[in-house]
Image 1 (cartoon, rainbow, N blue to C red):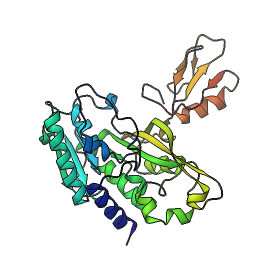
Image 2 (cartoon, rainbow, N blue to C red):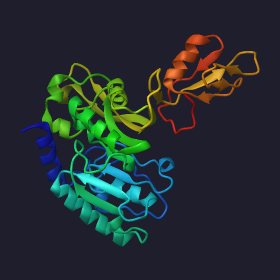
Image 3 (spheres, one colour):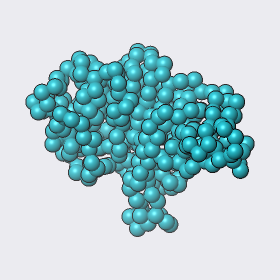
Image 4 (cartoon, rainbow, N blue to C red):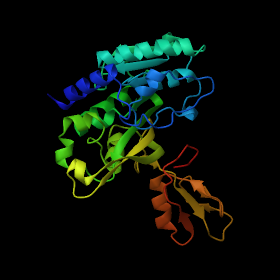
Length: 322
């Protein structure tokens, strides 16, 4: 049985018998006015963070959600796009499609604003999305892509890129590893399906996103996720997994490389009235300006005594310059 077949069987099982505690079901759900999330959805919240960022969802975007799970985030996306077919949910596991359909019917009973027509659940997978080129505003996935082998992850990212309109956004939440996961854990197909052994390091993960063609990546959150301890997982030292929420934009990659925003700022501490690097960045004395990591490195190298670069906050919500 391949790791994808193992994952399909695993999620078939948890669709029929929800496992409280799988992934981050114990985490606090995003609270939105007038939105009631049915209990079965909460019990099937098999994600490690969130892909629903309200600031990204103006003008009722069309959302392609890959891996519907219990339907929770599909419902949350529909909250911002209240029209038939606004959310297209792709799911390869029949039992999960059936469970999500039931849960959305309950949601329609509990939320007067919601109609089940807002979410269209379709059979399909991340490698061959049943969507035309450049046809959706947002592609989202939560704690699915991390189970893929790197080659399959590359395929999934390129498919997401293909489906997005120019300027569209890939909104993801996945575990990452603080160091490379040992082969004996990577090869454990059930642990991979449980989002515990397929995670890449931050650097590897971001580079694959850029390799797929995304010219700008913004980190919305980075937080502790799980600890793989020495005794349980046969490790020399404990290994921390983190949850990473990111938004990647389908824009051209600049000649000097993609822009990755992690919450760094540049502060001019010189004596002139302003600093202009002649590349689009004008810094006023003492005022932090959000910059991408690439620009932060260039500024630090060019004016090490007059420009202060702050550390990554791993919580960037837009508004910077690159």
